[in-house]
Length: 397
Image (cartoon, rainbow, N blue to C red; front, side, top):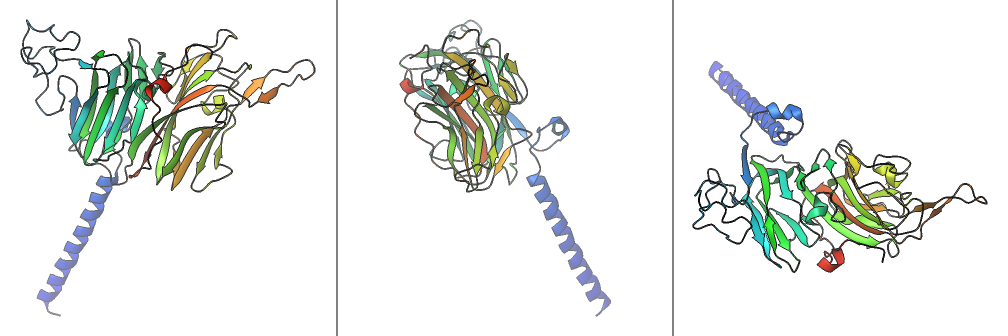
């Protein structure tokens, strides 16, 4: 082999090696954790760009915030819509929306790739108001939840939450920080299914435009409701198909059964072909929500909470609003998932039976939100109950 041929072969091998290294580095960059996940990520600079959608910038486009003109504002019906007439463009012209009875408004409609980082809304909402999220042009939503329950507000009753991914702050402010990646498109709608106009509805959706890791799943959330008289164990989630991670449970539990304690039931995770018995089986409801021996007082932590007022008397109903976020401990599944909770009470023993006994004949009302990530396409959701069937119980039936 001539020296020229030897050098040429060496150059080819060097180029091939450089291409492989570049491909590996590119793959590592693509599959690394998204920016801003954890405090360490805040310092990592990349090509992401932050955008934010509000009524003052409904498209989230660069340099187009606060452009509404009092003389030609898009919606004059909203509360305080005329308050900036004397100030002109650039002031607080369109901070709210008016959503008429039966009306659906689009909150977000943007192309990707990107990741939703934060959603803020103002309470005053009810289970008649439904949020739906659609990823990458899908026809059925990946999120379909009454607005208050999505933010872990149960029974339409405010309780302060100071958690890692949901914050409910005094003044009726609802916040979530679930990262929600999308590759091609993201669309969020808000539907007012009540017979009354919602005269003040405001929101902010902050997101970043930038690469989405190849292995990132899509965010999903589903609302269900049932009565333990007809469904025990109660099904929190079922019918999930594909690979994913279960990341959170919210329960709005209305205690209607005359028993000393309602929360002896076990939370069970059936996954990857489980049938009669689950792979993960807890030891009691309060244990699953990271408590023990009942909930003697309200609490709100990074990963779990019982946030409505403590039980003050033996009169019914009692309202429990419980959240559990699987952030350090996601439930990872490969092909399918079902999540259930038993409605199981405890009755204090009498002199003849000092130990007490379990009671599974319960009449409690249970509503839930399940939160998970998975690869698309997702299986169809059950039909969301009609607005009248979603109303919280106000008194003993």
